[in-house]
Length: 390
Ligand SMILES: NC(=O)c1ccc[n+]([C@@H]2O[C@H](COP(=O)([O-])OP(=O)(O)OC[C@H]3O[C@@H](n4cnc5c(N)ncnc54)[C@H](OP(=O)(O)O)[C@@H]3O)[C@@H](O)[C@H]2O)c1
Image (cartoon, rainbow, N blue to C red; front, side, top):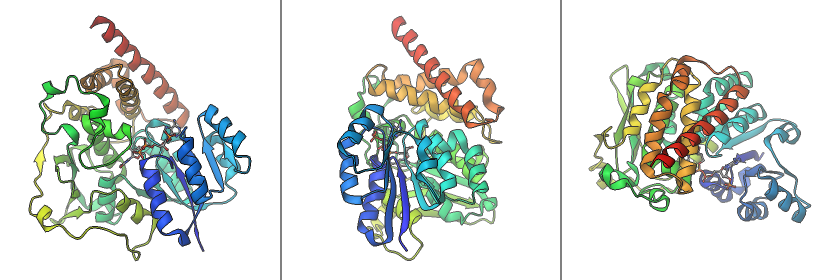
């Protein structure tokens, strides 16, 4: 029987790559639900090619426009409709909306699927305590799809108690070998050009500032329940090794795959026996793996990690993700400078009203959403103030 699939954020980089794997293996899959915010051109192409049973288009204007022109397609305007859309559990969901907006849909779709692959790291960081509760309650299988976390997950076979240390690798983004003082006038078009990965704009900027690695360290702390001090970041420009795990029994395992997100996605979709087209083992790359510790002077964003507690999910994670979402938006709109992203993040995390949230566990989703709105406003106001003073 064909697997029923839903993709949240099907018009994005991860969404499209998931669909390409499905296109190459059509006989195994039925597309039950696809979603976009506003990309009507792409979603129309996807409707023609994959014939999804349902669509969600969250941008109101685009939703109405689409509905008017495509009367034959079942389309909804928001994720509150999930209850209406799902009569029974489907087989697999890929959660690939970008930023904080992915949190609510991710939590709400868990009860409707047997398995969920989560690429949206922001939802894991802000809402892991709620997500893990939903996973347990609904007996939903979970696969992390961020390449580093997928690698750690594969290496540990879900036995996280044996982990001693985790080393997360970082390609270093477009500015690994650039001096910080030369980054003052970097424009968005330059910052989104990642040397190794072809990703959405938001995560590409996070890679350039190194905030992405801060996210990944916190994400690993949550998923694998390992202390933050035992998670290290190493620069590895070749992006061949995605994670190194040192176990308590003295063994260390590393996981290598091509710089291609289709590999983690493919493995989250299939059992172990199917074959994906991949490159031959590259001995040359193996002989030149080249790892280094990353300088906090060059990438001060790494200082953000010390604000967080290893113990549990706190509301401070929502402050980090929300402030960063706002700052990246402002940078992409040319309203702040590249270096301001990290500078302002450190300022926001140092505000007394937020610092005290370090040990405050989120009670529910509504509280996290309220905090997100407040932090975005606060962050924006700090930027306006500093621009006026400049
Ligand atoms: N790309 C990668 O290689 C990669 C690797 C590891 C982890 N991730 C994580 O995976 C997630 C997706 O990344 P991506 O690079 O695929 O992002 P992306 O290319 O920017 O795509 C984001 C998707 O989310 C949708 N979306 C954006 N804002 C939305 C909103 N407010 N409401 C509903 N849908 C919205 C977009 O719709 P529109 O097309 O209409 O904007 C698009 O379908 C991120 O959390 C990222 O950190 C990505």
